[in-house]
Length: 344
Image (cartoon, rainbow, N blue to C red; front, side, top):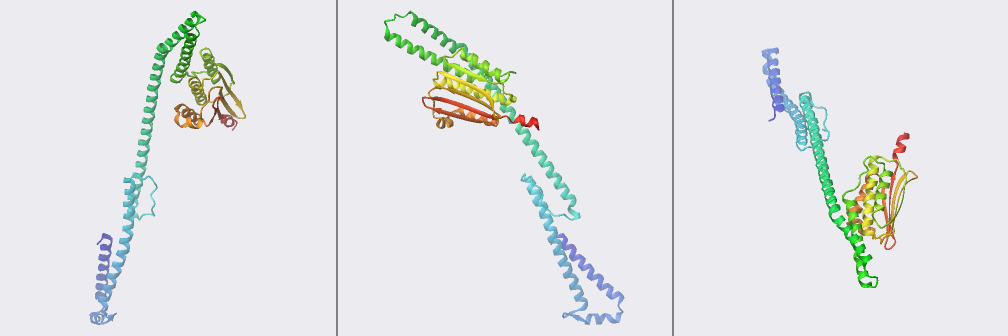
């Protein structure tokens, strides 16, 4: 038997005893026998009063027991939710005065648990970001070291081989056509290797803007590249006002596009355009190379995926159109939202 029910039964018994004593005290002794002889529903009057009091006590006890069971069940359920890490609000009715302090402690405990969970998640996120930055820094340093070693060794050797082949071609007798063709093929292979090496160096060690505007950085990069590769290069770079993060992403997309052109396109001409039109910053890179299947290469090319991701990160759209044997055009359109924000 639960404590509320036991208390109700005892209270009913005490009430019945009190009523019995009252009857015996206030009624004359001559009427005691008449009360006992008088029956209600086949029971002596005094026994009926005692039975009714006992039944009322049991009924009240059952109601109180049910009420307190529901309240305790709500308490247990709330504690179970906290134990399982559920952070939702506690659904409950107004508790009785006996349980209000307990409910306040449960709500306080849940708030502390929620705050602790947020702190732990924040620390985990900060740790992941720090580890990611550390990995990026290590990778960047290693790529820079590898690019420097390739430039100092392989790239210089390719340049020396190219100069030697040019000297051999100039000193060869003009009537030895067969050897001249073979050496010309070797010279072409060396030139292609130089192109791929420059593209690889550009990919491994991307040039940073380092305080320059996007216009200055692109112009400097294209001017330097034009003096090193056998491509007819043209560019029109306007001074488009952009946020620093947008400039960095567009600059990296240009570098990746140039690297792909040098390595795969076998192009003779290249054109780069950066303009502002109709509220968009537009970067366009066009070559007359061999072209490729965009849909097939999109899923398997890390470089293409990286460019699409960079464009999406700045709210832009990257579109590539390529026809085999006719060339490739890459276009990035980025909305200039900051101007509208400034007016507001």
